[in-house]
Image (tube, rainbow, N blue to C red; front, top):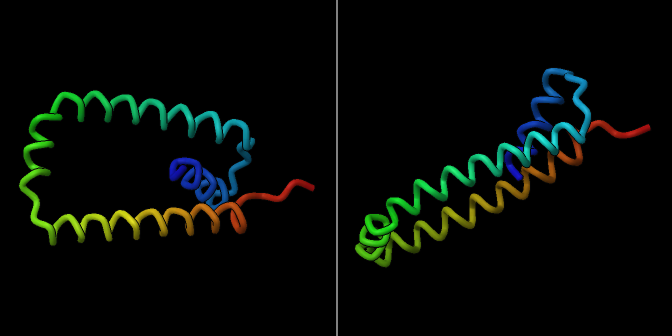
Length: 91
């Protein structure tokens, strides 16, 4: 979703005339590509990651969860802002 929001912001700031269908197609293609690469990188390092996560203190887990919730809320606000204010209206 963030990729689509970034495309919408770029479209607004630089006054590009990019059809919405193209933005969605490029955004979804980038998302699939990045997700695929991340999956294989994380899968390759899964034992190391599990070992590190199991060593976290309770305080660090709480801070991590708090930042995750803040990230989700900021992302939702950003998506709402872009869709309401930056995307061109159809006439």
